[in-house]
Length: 308
Image (tube, rainbow, N blue to C red; front, side, top):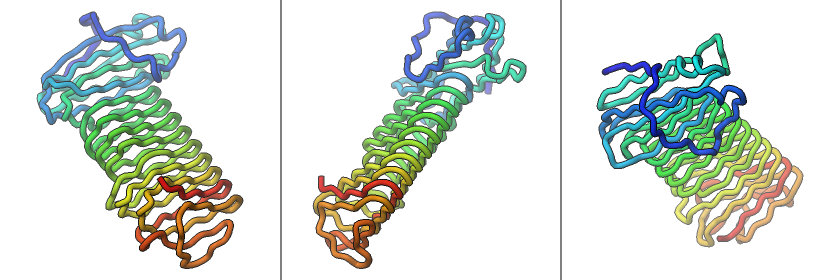
């Protein structure tokens, strides 16, 4: 293992960072220091990254190399130049850590554009203020930021994605997912695996695949809209305090529905054989031959069961 500290000026000719989720830090952006590093990394190697006040973009490519482009910035050129970036690297793993200067607090930061082998494990990717966007990669992985979106595409393996203020978007993820944001929406497309999605203020929308584990979607202030396959075999629990719940279901689905809304109504395209209470606000019954539980509840919003 060879630790490396990046302080002096390095190679030029960097690729540009994307405009999305780049936070405006005002006068700090006047002073920047670009750097570039490249190291061998096995096809199944591991990447760990910890930065602050900056976006992170990671994508896969067909080379057994990790290619790191970064920009450090601060309130003065000296502060940008001297921000510590420690890189430990060997063929099995690369670890990048930006050292926070406690005296300057939030007046510095670093952002990254990184390429890794497509099968590399994105072990732990964190940024305190800035979005995280990954394309390709494997898990298990944890991605966390305080203020910014998390976007994951073409990922294989379990994933824990968490942000305080920003959206979570997951596309073509094959693995069990835990997604959380305090203020933002959660969206999934092409998810193959279980889903546990929670947000305090935002919507939850997406497709749910066949899963052997329960699917949970919960928000305090926002609607929930999910699409289920015909062979859905696990329980679904969807709860919101202020918003509607809409399920798009195949015509041939078999399920047990337990739905409740306090201040709205329940509507369905399906013939439901009742097992318990049925009213404007409550429904307990089965669709088709019965099957996994669809547990749906909202305080202020309607519940709809729609045929696809």
